[in-house]
Image 1 (tube, rainbow, N blue to C red):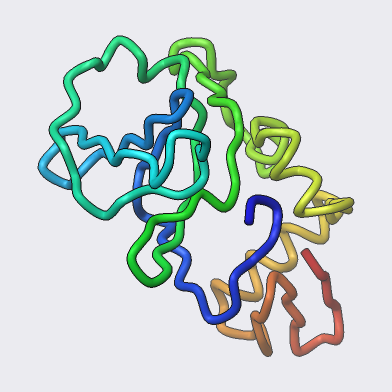
Image 2: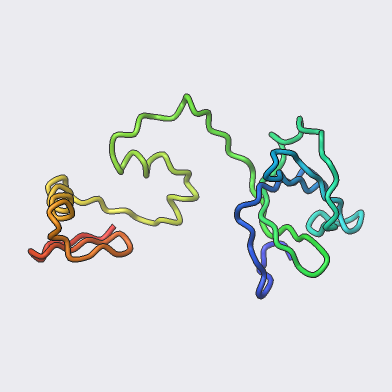
Length: 153
């Protein structure tokens, strides 16, 4: 059911799936769009596996983005969200890691949590240690130099 996870279900994160009312739409790797019909007239979360060519492409910008899973003889919608379309020409210039973080969606920033940026001097020490081969380890965003200086990203 929507909002819950199925045990041992495989999540297909590389599919581009959209939902418009009771129409599940998937973009195939060939670039074409296909539609899957609902299992019953009342459902908008369970769909048949049979794909049908979809040519109502004018509906795509107003459809919701969905995550799906396959279970037995059906496709299930397990999560949906509105599309956030960002014009590529409106993206601010990126000059630093802070800029990259700033440009993330609020949802991704929430997942990452609070980020404490090292001072510019500490960043220079880390870069020089990596370049000189004196960094002792890099794991999960943390770096420790042989001089005992460390940072955690």
